[in-house]
Length: 477
Image (tube, rainbow, N blue to C red; front, top):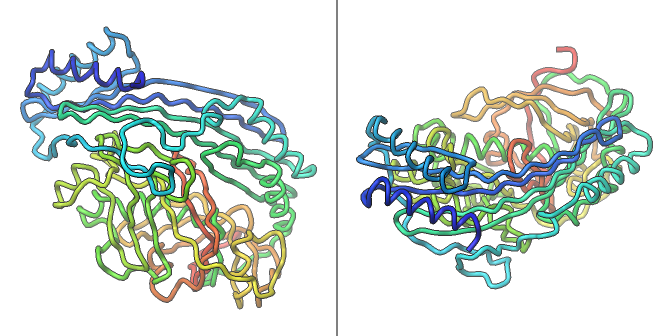
């Protein structure tokens, strides 16, 4: 039994002692460790590490629900947390939406892991070397990135971290798990033109700073002296770094069970909303044989599992916690979190399935183009190759119309060849419409794991060839 599970069990004992046997309670204990090595002007300027253990209690007492949290894990701190949460529950309005507790259930292991099936232990492909990575190991990758840029100005970060967590409730559910991750994100710059490379992984050993630095430098050099293009609808190839933004917005706004229940989501279960080539899966357990990117349970103790959201263009599911599931007559999909009752449950490990393997068939062999995007660019008559999207904001959540900017390299392509770099562009585009039937002209044959800039989540994204992307402004306005 892990230290976290021991704390969770102690909390349940205290709840029964202080609130009585009729109280319903759930406890999540998380030990979060994050280490970050940041660099700018081609030199490391910050190395930091933090590790905290937090305890979160949610209590349902006499029809009322209250939550509390603490980082004090000693006997006095735990008792104080229970007492404070009981006091809060007694003055809280009744909670008619309380969905009850998760019943005891074993955790799942993806078929990609040895011994797949069900279990309740810790090991889900956890990489100890990543969890215990040193500043020196991260600095080696930063040095490799900087050296590979061959004199260009560079900036970015290399991070490692792990989570060890446990959950227990008064219904008898008790589970534990841990996960580790590493990520690198960096740019190279020359003459005001930027190139980017980023990668997420469950094993630090798989981060090659030299490969990433060289990729960023090639893009920066090729993006110099861009021309302007007028607004309009353009055929585009979005590289994986840009596609990750689509997946993030689909997760937060589109497949969010609370938004769906409130009719604020585009999702229509059973409808052919996407091109038949599109399949989107939430995969917190890592079904491709890699260590699991997420914990094997959510903050309500529901076992995590692979969830197909879109299969061959048909929307099949949205993500639920216990509250949104009860409201809609569904079952929790294991997406409960400390904020899901307020903000809704959303996925953080989406994978857009890659397309079939295909040959480039000639075309531009420029190293500017991501490998999986080459066959897509080779088939483009006239359009844009887009590296990255940023500063994206949702204008209409129901149709998921998003506005944002391109970043870190855009190029005009004619007859499968890069013609010239283009200055950054503003777009206003419905993401579901861009991937609707007939509008997806191709999908790259390889998915790239990319870090979520806001959380420990990650997205597996291939390149996408789309028939139309709505450009609404350029560098001049």
